[in-house]
Amino acid sequence: MAGDSNEGDTADGRRSRGIRATGRRRKPRTGRQRVTRAAAWTLAGAVVLGGTSLGFVYFKLNGNISGVDINAALGTDRPQDVPNGSMDILVLGSDSREGDNAKYGEDQGGARSDTAMVVHINEKHDKASVVSIPRDTLVERPSCQGDESAGNRRVPAQRAMFNSAYETGGPACAVKTVEKLSGVRMDHYLEVDFSGFKKLIDTLGGVKMTTNKAIKDKDSHLDLQAGTHTLDGEQSLGLVRTRHGVGDGSDLGRIQLQQAFIKALMDQVNSVNLFDNPKRLYDLADTATSAVTTDSELDSVKELSGLARMLKGIKSDDIQMTTLPVQYDPADPNRVVPMESKTSKVWHALRDDRAIPKSATKGSAGDKTDIGGVVPGGKGTKRAEAAGEPGGE
Image (cartoon, rainbow, N blue to C red; front, top):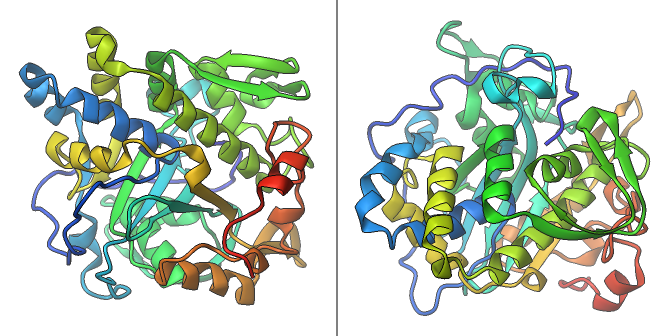
């Protein structure tokens, strides 16, 4: 969730609540439903599950949640919804510089989608694939409705930075851009901002993570010595935002660090018995529901808790982390472009509900950016190589 983009943003209509979405649903889920957690979505689901046991605060928690009707905004011109029981969720970390987030930089007109992940949950609900999309990726951005003050439709762009989609038309445009890029229909949308992320981590009691090397980045307010740390909210935010403190200073290195943090966060959530501490349980539920913006099919405690039940029990080893295969743009080394044949393999794997093959990322810029020396288990380490990567060729 960094904040050094030169793109401005608007967050039009993202707090609207109203008509329920009417898009097709995938087939009903049956049996023991176990899915993965990813980034802020992971924590939000877990704590909302706990919150449902506190019936006396149900209506307060329900009122905390903000929702936006993605289906109504996008209409029918979308990829086909494959009814095989799998689920795809676009998870965004936004970096609005307003209010509590102002300390992280000058406000440039709104929020930016600084971290983007497509989370695919398989048909059996026991494994997941997470595809991180670099925010500096040049993509074909479709026509999107502009903000309410502008009152117009923004024309398509052939070489637009991925995170400009959120600037152009908020969550709906971000979803539309991902669907255009991938050909995969997003079933749900979930967003968390800087201040919400910090509060979630602090309320959880921190996240334990080991760094093999010192990480120091004044831009993200991070100063960590080598060793094992229990990171508080401020440090966790600094870790997932840093790009100059690790690797070659690119967004690709930061993504790998974010993925390592997500797994540590998942392990932390799994290790905490929330029901032994009612106050923490309530605080987590209150913080989580206040921190997230969802699509209108998830904007209630009932719906979020249903998703959370699917999240229960999954381990970090059941998740395949992937960065969209990209290469540096020959015309601008500060931007990346998708490697078409390899990205096609990634999206086909998600549509076919199977693991992403190794060949899809081999040779991509994200695969070459190694932070294995910074955190245990990072790409390039003996542990990662021993564990292998699901999917084969």
